[in-house]
Image (cartoon, rainbow over all chains, first blue to last red):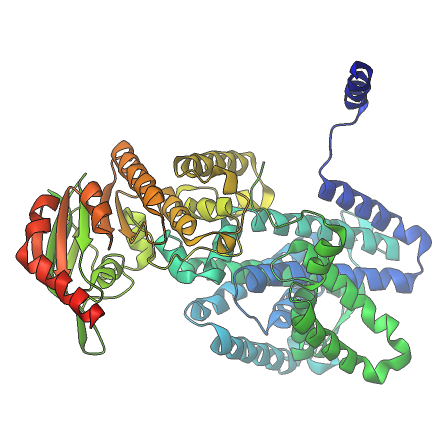
Length: 333
Length: 258
């Protein structure tokens, strides 16, 4: 018996310090994504870039909808604001992309807060209508100011220079998008586990109880709107260099609905869910290319099927299958 | 000076008076019981004090400050905490997260600190966790920290509600039927804990409770309400013998047996 105990002790001493499962998995995922440009052609790189952008949008929207319980039908508009601000600052004002991108995200966050202001006292259907109205206004504003935005003809955006380095190759753009996505996911996960994430969850589940704990619902909703809009704005700014061209049709109601599909299918209130949903639904149209005319039908069926049979989304499925204890813990060790 | 002062407070719902011109004084450090038959207006009174419903008349002063028209979260930030008759726990969060949420207003780090997980934010989170676990210990809930509250017995949910309300570090804590759903032994233990915690932290308590036995043991002073008005006010011994109180309760029992 004694020898067995000794062997166990030796094993313990030799073992590496335990790395949390999610950190190990994230590191592996990032490593694989880093290798992508070596193996993939430019079309597949482009697809992965789109998936990464969608992950950023989904993370922000999930904080607003999944955690704070506020619906937004205008997330495509926040993306448009980030995209146009970034593009115009680069092409018209000659600013560096590294300046234009965060300013674009900040502009979206500011407008998000502006929209959150009347939305503080609204919820459900009324909030949906207000955000839908905002979407229309942004669409019309872009279409009706062709001198600035190029109107319905759109706007071309050249590949930028960053610190003297021209992002000419697909791989260079890809690595920039990947780095910013990793940063955005980290920030989103940090926020969700912070006191603000807990306040978001509290407001969603019982505004009444949250207020009794001194949490001001108006301020918290405003913050959620502004954070979610900022994430979408950042994704919009990245979209300009990934696609190289923006026009208002990219940022309409169908894009907004797609964003909601990401988080519902992925899993509401979960960072992992945002990633799973955005990636799965960006890849889906590619898998359906043979049946393009039915793709809307398949989208709808997936959304309905998720709501009926998988209310916790892919994240719920993942938890069940892998028995991973990734329950949202909003506590830092 | 009294900590909480109600002057001629009236609350009504669609023309039906729930509280009528009620005046009440609660001294700092006392444990005040509030009793009365169903529909006497006890919970309406708590809702008025915490800003959930707005009185149609009267003034409510807390530590000399008029709080009559403040929002519930502002009233909480001045130092009034509460529990709920039908617990309002965050059902999708663990027991520990529920209590941590109560510490929101005592954490100072901002959105940048949260987003980047700055050292100051980490320190505050660690401290908050310690404080929450201490509260769970005090209410014998420590081993349930990872559970979801919706799946736990009602009596335990009441205790989680109390732990969460204590997390806001109130000066005045309003307990709405704190021992409902509990066995006698559990109720006694909870009452003893509430007393001890209140004394240790210098918290003034206003307790609404149906269980007269519990109320006699807990309260320094009892106010009896009936049909939105105060019908008696005194020590537990005086209240037990008060004719108006006995009539109000016997009336209710007679109705119940009818």
